[in-house]
Image (cartoon, rainbow, N blue to C red; front, side, top):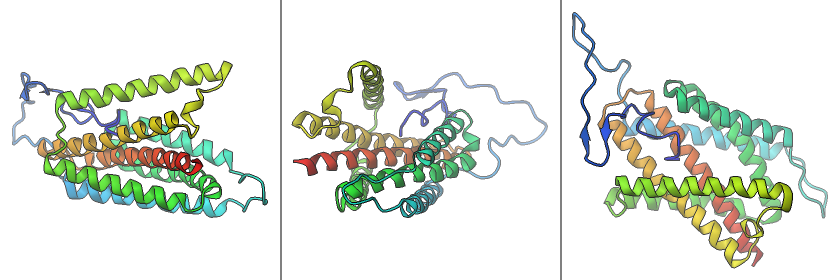
Length: 268
């Protein structure tokens, strides 16, 4: 997600002044007896980042498919029994992998595939549960996610959506606000139950899901801009995996929000 893991500090662009689009005083180069090379092992490219993203999505699909097929058919009239141990384990492993890559971007080439395989377990179980309740909803959610991705990419490339410093602050501020809301709701839920509109199919609940899905879509624009900045600033090739991981996290978030939104619409 232009998401917290994709930021200028992690990308090595900490000296860039976003407001003035100028560089702060440069850090002196080390003294050597020969030519100074900033990076070893190649430079980041859009093509390389796209290839890494496709590979991560393929791993998620494979893992999710395996998990889906491993879940037994539910008894008629009963809910599907999810392997909660697998789901919780997959969530924890995926979270740890993202955190490690966030603090050590050079590990993303290993952490990102681990995240994809673990997250696939979670998505496979969740998708199977939704599929048992709403026939065809998973296919619709995947199609809608792909559609939103393509539309946001076209809007970004055409300049209709421009990622300015103000745009980035608004999107990240809204994301932090959403996280704060979820945290407060969780604490309140321990004593009084979650706010009903988060999961119900009321107009307020549907509107909430639309807003959250829209926020996830705007994060795609931030991801596109981050990738473009990385290429323009000639970051090392291992950052392709780091940026691919960020984009994949955003796509997973968007898919889950669309899945929730579609389920609410099915209730009406």
